[in-house]
Length: 193
Image 1: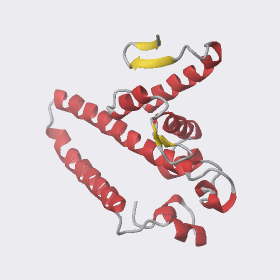
Image 2 (image 1 turned 135 degrees about the vertical axis):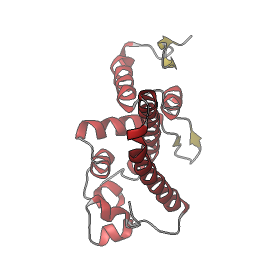
Image 3 (image 1 turned 120 degrees about the vertical axis):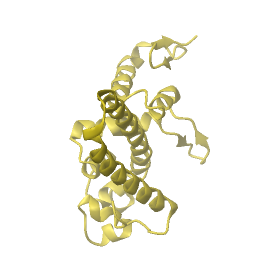
Image 4 (image 1 turned 120 degrees about the horizontal axis):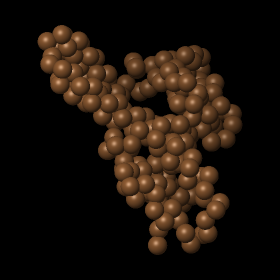
């Protein structure tokens, strides 16, 4: 993405100019480095693949899967913030200023995702992102173990969305004193004592 920010989302006009990225920010430098590094990697990989052994091909695919999940985890942070800035309607809502209704629609457009995949990102973002109280105090993510599993690239966004939907479906069946927690991604759900 270049320094125009909202322009690349397919938007134009006064609102897009208000939303455009400031080229002097640290986030812009990080974004540029990521794009440059990814482009260099893709070019180098294409040159090396014809000479690679079978095991190297599989190991490289595994590395790409880990990198993809790390990028998805990074997207969650952005989508959670876009969602927080999209509360309400009209000019106070970032999504509305971009011509969308929700952060999921912004994600779908920006990331080129189908609606269901973008909805998964938005659902997961809200469950694994830290929040602030009404007084501005930091609050932990609602599902910190799941947030950690996503950050470690051990759980995919799709799997995380399934876990969250399952927890949402059963939460009405448990008493207030009984809370389901995600103990370890490989061991499943356990009733907290």
